[in-house]
Length: 417
Image (cartoon, rainbow, N blue to C red; front, side, top):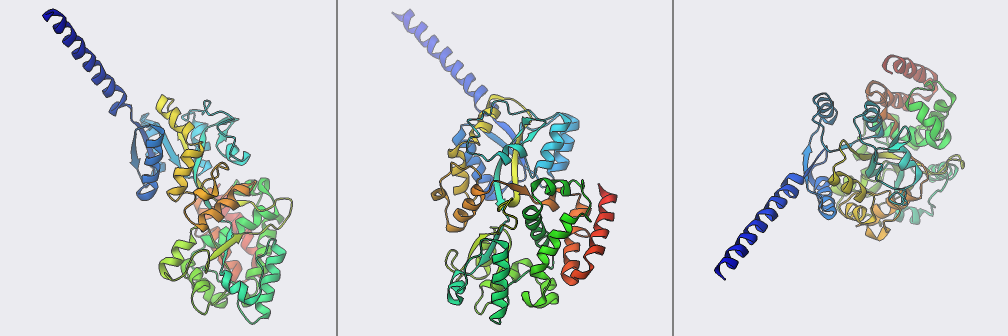
């Protein structure tokens, strides 16, 4: 009897030891490494998603992602997963052969994604990335109460937008507030117009400098924008006031008491900026947006913006589990409740926490074309300050000099591509 108790105790001890070793092997040591720029609420939301997936993560937040990954490639110390800021970086790493194709992500997993998202995440016919946390920069802000008071209708096409512009001027009011002291909000205008007039293929060629800046398609985009910015009467503060106004104050001007203008273009993130300065403004009542309208019906109303993409450098089981989970409706519902915008069509609009995010998601999921911000994908010397941004400022100052402006951009592009 005593011997049986000893054997039984020994068995229990061995069993507990095995359980402890298993817990160590698949507990702390099973955590995968993820590197990205996310922090604060973004990171908190992501960690909730990882927890729901049943995957432990060690997250490395860095503000110099390109340098960190370049060093890791050379030293062969790559993380299991990285969160990249655009498809250009995905293409670069896939070309280097350091990314693992996501062969385990099936067509069924991607059933709620428009083809454009699969294409953006692919290289040489293989899927390498899952996009997450999308930005929508194809919306125009307005005050519904002011529109109702003045009998103005929300435009659905570019021609209707131009007609509304003229109607507001005829009423002795100023249609647009544009903050142009920094140029990137101006380049966003051209990007939205370019993809609506030239289409996604030409837009892509423009980004890659496969067509020159002097191409008729680029000129047409600027000239179309000129229907808005080409007349100082359309702009709050005229030309000088526009060029001296920040993009934040440009938006505030539309929603303050006694508004200086009635329309403002920029991304779906503007509500937080405005309400931080005008706490009495109620989003959905005093402040709302409509989709940047179609110009050529052939291309509809694409969405221009940005999105982060998760890529894998290893094929660990935990990596596969997390990457597959990111495609699920459940993961995306957690994301949108944490403030993200999802392109997953399976996510109910009711899952979004407020009217702005719901409306933005509606526009995003209805769009058949999603295009990345062109200036972000161009060489910085071309796409940013000193290049594209300043070209837009110069155009506002004097639209008649468009040919010279585009010739200067082409010369700049030839030096930097």
